[in-house]
Image 1 (cartoon, rainbow, N blue to C red):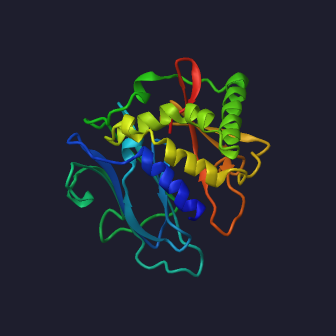
Image 2: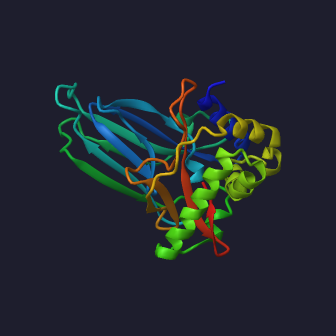
Image 3: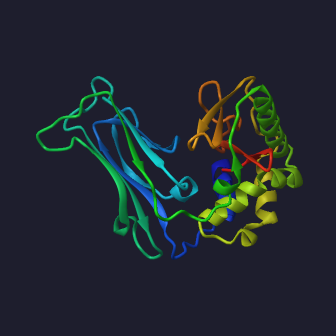
Length: 273
């Protein structure tokens, strides 16, 4: 089994999704002849390649929708010189659906479309923020528990130590330490996706995942970067180039990485997403 398949298998036991009647959020997008970057509350949801063509649906928005004001942000640039630049256009929409509905059948909550009319054109580069306040908030303990962040030297040191502990637990296949580090994240992600957290404590799947990646991680980058997201409530941790800090070594079985989002819960920096 390829490493990428294993990482997906690992996350499947955390998110054996059974959508409740409360509803779930999705992001649909269709881009033509534009290089686009789309984020929700500072978290990247999708981006087109340099050719400027992409369409699809992202269904994990329940993890990032939060109480109060939310922000959908779109950044647009022209495709590379020499690429198809005919009829540049984009349509992005966040929808709220219920169990049994397709994403297109969901209620449109907010959208962005450019150009605005057939007679107008997109003026590149373009950056647009669309603010909205959702009526329905997916179940989550995160937003009520997370504390205001202060990225001082002490916080950066504590976050770095947390990332180091996660890297060590994963690379040595220490199931006990790894589970302890991701416990809040696993339970709250399950809750937000309407899956029973207790049913997702699959020790066998976790052991299989860790066994597969044991000893196959690159060294942590010498310097980490810290990016406030979700209106400053969370910190997205990357290397100096904006890549995930935990990555596997090149392998014929494929490569994978682990994203790191942390928040302060009960006075302690915690992996939350």
